[in-house]
Every structure is written in C-alpha cells, then in structure tokens.
Length: 189
Image 1 (cartoon, rainbow, N blue to C red):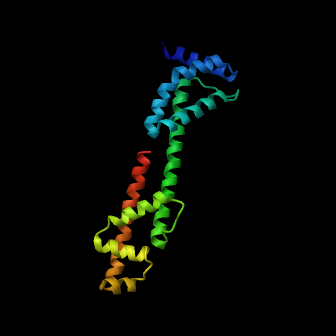
Image 2 (tube, rainbow, N blue to C red; image 1 turned 135 degrees about the vertical axis):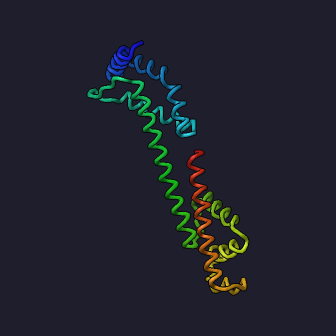
Image 3 (cartoon, one colour; image 1 turned 90 degrees about the horizontal axis):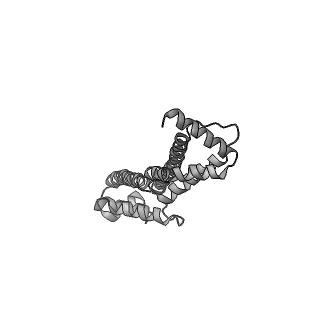
C-alpha cells in the first residue's frame, strides 16, 4: 500500500470517528490497541498504567471535535501515547523530587517522626544503617535521640569538631544514598 492510500484511509476513518461511527472506532481500536499497549508498557514499565494511558488516548480520539483533522491516524495514536507516557513519567519525577527534598529536609531538621509515610521512614533508617559505624552512631544520637553536638562529643568521648565533621559526612552520604533510591524507584515503577 502506498503512503497516500494509507493517509487517505486514515482520513476517512477519522472522519467517521468524528461522526461517532462506533464500527470505525472499533476497527481502529482493534487494529492498534495491542501495539500501542506494548509501546506504552515499554515506556512506563507498568501494564496497568499502560492500559490506562491507552484508554485515555482512545477516549481523546473518540471525543475529538469536528474541526480536528488527522491525516495519519496511526502516527497520531503513537504520538498521543508517547506524550501521555512522558507526562506520566514527568509526574512521577516531580513526586520523587518532592520526596527526595522531603527526606533531605527531615534529615536536616532531625524530625523523623512522620507517621504518614512508613516507607519513607524505613528508607531513611536503612540509609542511616549503611553509614560507617562511628558516623552511624553520631547521626543516630543527633537525629533519633535529639542530642546536641556537645552532648554527643561527651557521650562518645570525642571532640565537638569530630562530631560536626561526622554529621556533615553522614548527611552527605544520606543524601547520596536516598537520591539513588528515588532514581531507582522511578526507573522500576
């Protein structure tokens, strides 16, 4: 088939869909659903989300107004699917950036008594547990026990400067570890 024939066929099908011809819509849906679903699933790595995206793309096609024109229906469907996937991924990135900033703020504020996000608490505790032993103990005393630098230095029999240095290094390692967690979480959703 030539490109001109395919484009003409696309225009005819789209014109029928704009007139709410359910037979034409069903044909376009059956001919394209599986390949669009696989395309979306490769983008978002989640079958249910891919299905939701494809449904929204076909809903937009069905609701297209009479002034819209599409000469390449298949191209339109793929572009709409790609854009919907990118929008979804952008939304996830925004959520992950927000969580990453929340973690950083919580660590710096030393307020880890947040009840609403148990997973977040667990990730922070796991990250603290991965610190070197002395740093881990200092961060634990600072964050979970609420001790001041001088109190930590006295309890551990080290200088206040060592406490400050260990806290600085600990926070730096926590940021790095937790940032990696959110990047991995984004990639494997």
